[in-house]
Length: 129
Image (cartoon, rainbow, N blue to C red; front, top):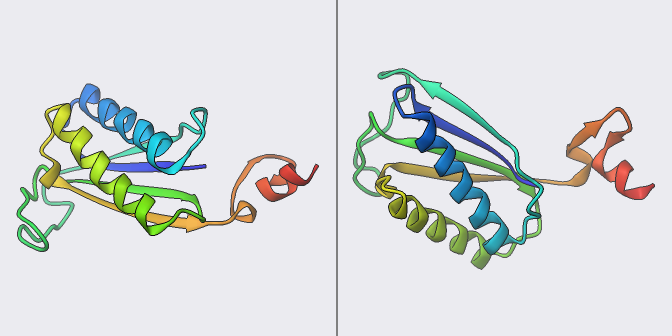
């Protein structure tokens, strides 16, 4: 049940960040077993200077072109799946013409009790009925 939040420079074209999310979603389905219908994303635009990225920490990047991908998902994936996700997303970024060096990704894991999609309460409650 991933929810993606992608932080992008404000001048990044909509077609580009939509393609990034499409590739991210496909990778989550293929590497982490996410359901095809679990397709949620919030795009947050930032102005030049609003994000501060060290240009050389663990790789070289353009701080003005860097995107940050946050992925909140249910816990339970193996470390190998997470590593494969990171590698696969970067490969996919390159395939759509986005420099993968200009990406930072991280996962936030949680449990069904931490999600709610309706007035019925948490996903844990919904799954129990």
